[in-house]
Length: 253
Image 1: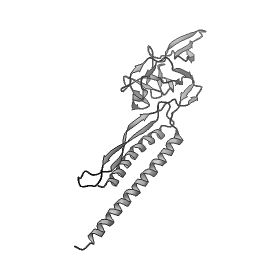
Image 2: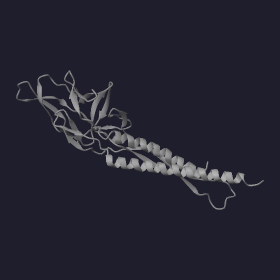
Image 3: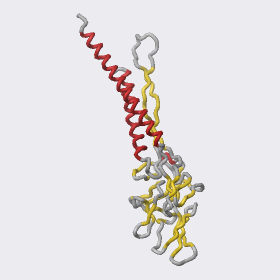
Image 4: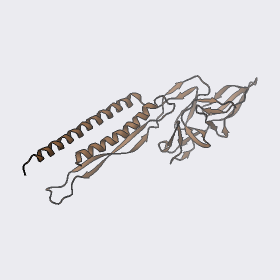
């Protein structure tokens, strides 16, 4: 196969994978706390011939190779909800939750109460505090969450606050190394936990996705156009080869 076809096919393969990344970002535009992914590309150089009778040095052929993806861990916009159980992290920390018997992490702070008074995520995972799950009593009201994560309530007819726990916020040396598990959850992956002393909680707010919908749609159109242009180029190369073969076949022996 000629170099032009190989280069075109290599580019089409990377465009397909880039489209998968973009489509996933677009699908999660409205997912609370979602962090966008982006593709990484590099140039792979290789000579096109290795015969000794060529005059001059071989020209280099430039292929396209996608080396992976990276995660944009930037802060998403805050949306006010006026729900006292909704919480948004201002900073790089994550909420610690208990999912399927293991500790996982999320930026989605849309919480609710279970039938037993435990604070949980919208998927039913328990939200962990510094001393275990946060549990409320049936008579609790006027829930207040301090910027440091301390949860207090007024119990029954009491006039003084009662502490129900402290939301556990976890930070990592490199959040981009966290492994996505689906359902807006992360595993530690190769990242290392570190003490968090900077992040704060905002009660009554939700952090939205940090995906730039306009930018992602623009990239999607760009990928589609590039794929079509390469497909046309490959078709032209194929027609050229076909025409050359037909003309050679007509040459008298």
